[in-house]
Length: 332
Image (cartoon, rainbow, N blue to C red; front, top):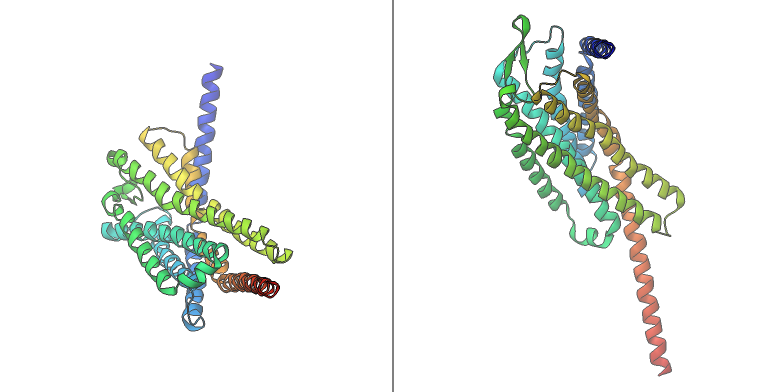
């Protein structure tokens, strides 16, 4: 009896928490509008800066420009969702617009993850292999890779058109599903795992690897001042931290929630955490303009200094070798 009462009380507390979260969501339905406005302003300003003031474009600017485009399109996809979450939660824009909005959401979400990885890899090559980057990595290569990224995210997001749909809820309201209907959930779940592994996990691995390699290279370089080392370590650490905050919780909790739905589990804790992660993931489009666009030039200048320092060291080594060779000939 005590165990049954304890279970009932825990279930009641879970329902109360869930209802409280739904009330909070209803009260902050306008938050995606604020996120969109901030993102449109920030990314629009970054794009204006790139187009008007940044000439010629180096590889870092090209990747940052594409990241800003992706985040700008993502911001536009949030506006219909804001009106959708306005109480009572009801999708009034029809099936076609539901599919298009969900597709743009995922397409530009993974555009962001891959362009963040491109920016990190570009910095990795420029700092760890400055001579190779200076001689072989040109803006046309960055444009080519950017085109490949766009084709990639367009392709991996295409199944959204098949799985997303409208579902009628209580009181005649319509729900625009961002995942899939219950009857096809077992088909959708492997696709969702693929998106988490390939669209989030792979870029996160590449980004983390690049940041660790950059940090190790900078720390071992005796020609870099301690304050510059701290600046670079802080910068690359923030890249990984922001990725872990915005992208990872969304993908982990999304698949945990899908697993809960497949098992018909009534525990709403995972669902509630997933709803909070969906709110959190949208903030990445607000942070990117401040973090990447503002620091694109400073990192390029730092990479340039690394190249100049290593080239000077190489020239000094060549000069020393020539002097030694000359001395040997004179003595001979």
